[in-house]
Image (spheres, rainbow, N blue to C red):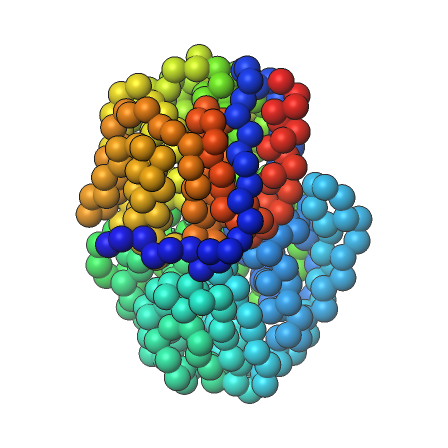
Length: 437
Ligand SMILES: O=C(O)C1=C[C@@H](OP(=O)(O)O)[C@@H](O)[C@H](O)C1
Ligand SMILES: C=C(OP(=O)(O)O)C(=O)O
């Protein structure tokens, strides 16, 4: 399927800086989008006031904050720094008769509706034009089968509860967020929930593990012992004081810069144990020719350092579990000396844009050789030239363009500001990384 042109064709072009030598930089990353938005939602559903520390400040996180406030929670910010913000969250009775803007945030459009089904009146959802195309059917059908009334199969829709919970069967092969969304609120359903997935494998299992781990940390009983079945017992969600990990998926373009330039990039505060998909970068970047080091530790956080040689090896990788890393890995593959095959990511067609179509179109526009397959991409070495790299309002497309621009002079990334979805400071951080050369 050809990529549609960007929704913001008149967006400004950002001349992607070309590296003049190997980068040597330490890059502190703000909090994880996935952890922040789960933590905020759980805090708003909890049995008392809680704190979410070093939360990400970004468009997706701000949309979650607005949604939770609309539904009746009180969120007060303190201690805002570049590292994030501390949110003091006081739950309230869940209020209906409100409208929620999901923007383009999967975590808002899939995580908030189950909570909204507990409201005392109807709750309407809408989002960006492309958000209306993102898959929602399985989670909306699941909520219907649990008792909610919903007037559409995608955004925009209005959901009217109440629902009492129970058993539900759904096909979550299109997005792990269908499962996570139901799990996050489930303890507040009178009967809890039993979810059975039937269909091709669910992608992004680490994100489901993140949901389960955060629920258990809040005292919720979750049984995930049987493959593709999750049972959440009804009960309170404990209020917590917790700290958000740095966003390891947003580490991807910065670590990629070490490979592209033959330099060294260190990310401090890398959690030794984590459910974040970005942790897979350690193996993926090593496969592509980097040396990846971190001090030995059993727990806590360490400095993760990636050093490249300037030569990038292609890879054959199934990214089904870590699909959100695909744009960066594809950009690296387009600069590699050997061919690459990326498999297992057909669900990326339902992300911020159809990422497989968008990556193939934009890499080829710069002279590359990238072919879409049913479930991924084949990328062969070919010299690239400058040109406009469209971002399709997709933060990870924009950062993939920046990675290519490190080596290819004359790359202009359209709408770099779209990185505000998860990393508003991206352009400044990128420049600072290069200035540290
Ligand atoms: O639950 C989450 O926080 C996420 C789950 C994944 O979604 P999919 O399973 O739809 O890929 C991931 O790609 C997305 O960036 C964040
Ligand atoms: C797929 C992504 O986001 P979302 O949470 O909107 O699904 C992503 O960040 O790569």
